[in-house]
View: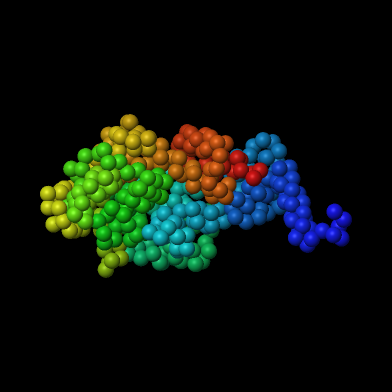
Length: 391
């Protein structure tokens, strides 16, 4: 058809197709310099300086793609933007990234910066705070002002954060600290009111990439389900047996680990009562008076058997214990925990979820590398960047 007789729509479609083909050709044949630029953009979220770009290009040419990725991680935006946006949704019920810096997020950022093992993310006595000499308000168990000022002043988190302990700053007994689960931000979001099941559910969701609906198991015994759960909701016991049991038979024995914790809204801080079970564990105890009445913080993981054994629980751990610290260690040693961290990094760097066999195989390889590195998240970022730099 002569050009003069083609419709406008046909012309637009042809031009669009040619442009798309050209773009694909650029992507497929991207050279080391373009790969370095794309890697830096994905990791830090900003373009690299020329000197950094030159150095990254040289590393890629030499086949040292992970070294190039580590160079990108040295940019302050990797900590203040990429890692903050990764961790902030874990700190609130809405799972929004639009929340101020807090002790939970700062601790995640600090552990990654210092290349610490994330195996202790849910169990260590660790806290990151602003360094002395920065003129910041004091760290408080009852206020987030310290962290909000770090962010408001746009301090460089590569140097502004220092490692300390929750027991030393907040006065929480060392045995009662449980990594980010016992930070002020986590307590405010997940220990407030309710029955403390929120802490269990959101820890599972944020750090094992599973929600309760995905891991229902109606084959576990119901003897540790609390009194507030009706055994015949709506007058139909089948609803309890076929639905409620699926979550509560596994969740309630493990959420018992949080029996001594609450968030006091009046004081604006987490409280730990030692040997006294929080009254919230007896909310609505007349719903089924013959149900389980929580006596202490002894927990048991009944998902080590049945279909949820596929979450990969560590056989060297007993699968039971007392308090949040030992439960956090149980979660942190699981296969699901390791693969979850890797999947989140993959989505952050590759800008997509794993979508084919090659991606899934890469996730498996990255997870093995992550564990072999001692659960260091920089390793996962480097592996993801090396894989996706040609996307």
